[in-house]
Image 1 (tube, rainbow, N blue to C red):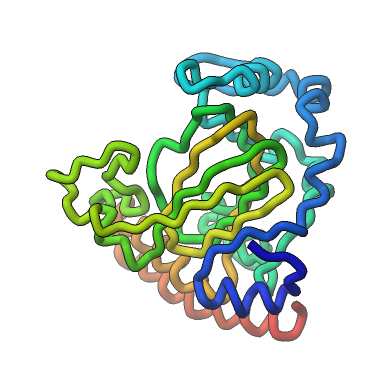
Image 2 (cartoon, rainbow, N blue to C red):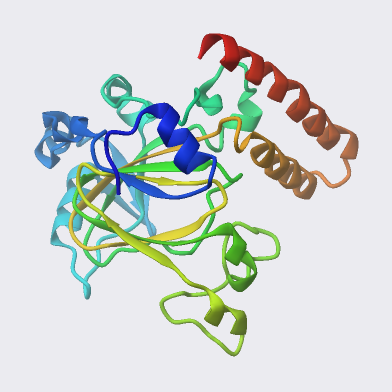
Length: 279
């Protein structure tokens, strides 16, 4: 955990070295009235969400998360896209740059490449809820998660332990292993995996570098803000994963998918020049 970091120190010490960190002094905005449960219930109860086949309004989701127990868990995950449901919050939540601007939100990046990762989201959860699978975020962005309410336990594994985690054949960003009850006969190498565990508290932000495996466990009523980030450090990985996904989806259109390779090189240089002069 750390505080008082400049953007340059953050980039050089943690981003460039692919080291997760919990930052304790960049989220004063989480204490604002707009992030209290009562405010959401009073102003956004028209928002609905279907979880496990059942439709809930936002008040029902919040009440279920408050009442959640280990034996009677709230529906989960409850993910809300901020630009769609809470657009005014875009002016409230400050951007945390990782040395340079976030390329996912740049007008220079075609929407076809950015749309899966340029979301800003709020997660509501309750005691006993957990993310379904150990995973790497789609297309290998950096991930920033700020706890607004409650504590959340993060379980992380570095990229060099990937072979121990048995990625799925098609969706290679998901692990086949149930880390809460691992089958060592089926996944013997998982015995070698060494997790990093940290509990992030309200007002704290965890930075998860590109390629790090992670999942979460919730200890109490919870509200989390999440945003992905792509910069010069993980641009090539992000575009390579985009290329791999396009190859799987359109195996007969190799000429189209190779355009992604060219785009990666050309736009990587364009972004580098822009950020050198303007960021």
